[in-house]
Length: 208
Image 1 (tube, one colour):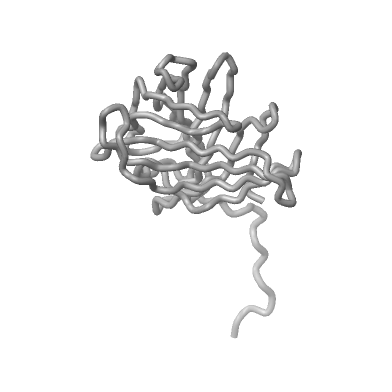
Image 2 (cartoon, rainbow, N blue to C red; image 1 turned 90 degrees about the horizontal axis):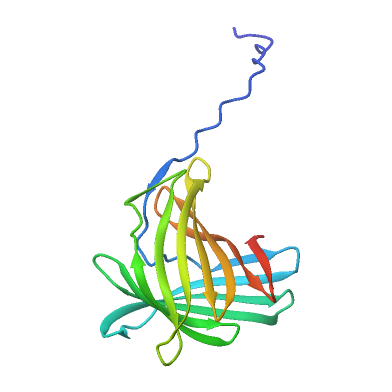
């Protein structure tokens, strides 16, 4: 028994599975495994890490801390820049109080002046404000401002992308940057793209 010749297949391609439309927002501050990204235009490498820090005082509050480090090297290992940003925050619910860090070797502190939590569910096609902050010098004088927004875009059948867009002015210099995270339907996060200034021009780092 059985057929001696297979039946011809219809000439329509299979329907791809639909894109994932929403996930529960991961806990903040975002935590992700070390990311190794590459800028193919300038031959820069970027290593991104997130590390929990110690509890410390910030503006009179006992705050938890988390450190986001973005280290750029010339391919071959020559250091180019090392930026580390510490977020000071309260828990239950998450509420950021401020930020501190170094950019191109210059130390700064920022106090959060407005905060809008992520929605409980991140949905493709949505965007919104996250926070605003004022940069201050060591005497407490306001020397600039920062705003952060988010955008959620499709990432395939099992994940989506959340991009954090930052626009800041510090001592008269305007800077924009972007961190894009892949969030899976199981809640795992990966840092997948970084746009940031390197040596005066915006570099785009993606997975190799």
